[in-house]
Image 1 (cartoon, helix red, strand yellow):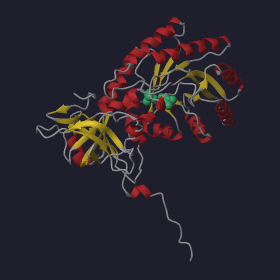
Image 2 (cartoon, helix red, strand yellow):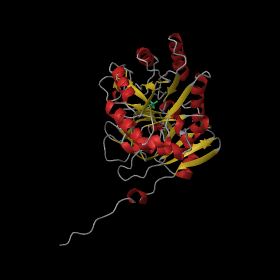
Image 3 (spheres, protein in one colour):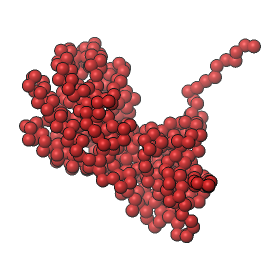
Image 4 (cartoon, protein in one colour):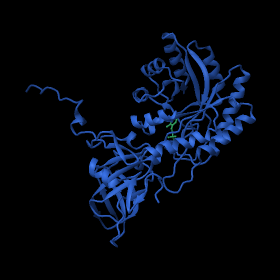
Length: 426
Ligand SMILES: *Cc1c(COP(=O)(O)O)cnc(C)c1O
């Protein structure tokens, strides 16, 4: 058994749904991202069931994986989208998504992005500073519109996660200090181009317990009541994303764990009428993908064994960026009794930080295929072309059918937008 239900061994070979990964590697080459459509649908279903038929809008935090096929699938299932840039808005539109279900997050929204979002008719801007509030009001007024806004407040709670992905503490750049929020809401009522519709927070990522959410929720409920006393009535409460996944042995909270407690808290505070917005990214896609890579060389020195593979930190940045742990499976389990060795799985890039996994017991030979597990979230979307490495293709498997949802980049495309300048005269 692997941790990902739709990536399991059949007859000793790891499959994506019903296709052997060996076949996909043959046909499309490596490194290769492979996604399971059913895994996306199952992850979505957990949120749908957790909503218990109440007014919950799930806005997929699309920076986790913004491939158009992923967006299209979630749109078909009824999702909205949490975007953080004008580029992401364009992707939503290209995938046929519904802008009226889009919330726009991020601390640095530029004027063109605000304009594009107003033009498209997004559901809400999650505003992170007073400066942004003023800019949005000015642009909306200029366009003869009113911009729907929430304040993203910083509730100062500890999400108990990696410091780089913890966002709800006072020292983080995100959100507006919750103590200052009532005054900023007052300021918003005075600006002509704004329509106050909600409140928002997002406290971090890869959260495994429900308690940080409940801490934040309690503070938001107090704020909502204080605002009501000032005559500011909200329509929705956005609790952000952040639900974690199992990479190794975690048992993260489920959407039901979260939403049942949220409904309870709201109902007991007479706030049951509020629409709930969630912005899950990782928990919808993380275990719906693997990164397939081939062993190029095995290298041994006094203290270490290295499996040098054809995928690298440019394809999957999380290990070196967050010290993240990804499972590694040998795609074809060997019956031989060859030696099991403890390897660091590393790429070809000229950086010591270029590793994908460390100290893993593997029975492998050059030419073998490995699957780096849990590579559906913050994997391709963070990929770069560092070392002039074309980014991998992405495949979506649906039962026994494989769809290419992004072509492998060509070497020529790496420098297609570049040009040399004229020779300087002697
Ligand atoms: C990244 C992000 C999300 C998604 O977070 P996950 O941990 O992937 O669920 C949601 N909302 C905001 C504002 C984000 O920045």
